[in-house]
Length: 91
Image (cartoon, one colour):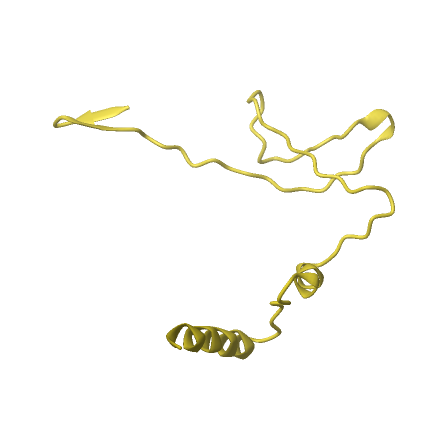
C-alpha cells in the first residue's frame, strides 16, 4: 500500500496468463513446458476438457441456436439490427 498526503493507494500488479493445449498422458498426467513460466513460482492451473466424442462447436453455431438467433454475418447486419431496435424504443 502506498500513502501520499493522507491518501492510500493499493498497488496492483497485472496478472499474466498463458493459454496452451496439451494431451493427457497415461495416468492422467499433463505436462506443460513454456519459457514464459517463471521457475520456482506458484501458478494456478485450470484444465478444461471435453467429453469423449463431443464435437467442439463454433461461437457462430451456438449463437445460431440461441433464442432470437442473433448471429450476424456482416457489420451492416449488426447496424441494421441496432437501428431497428432503437427505432422500436422510440415507438
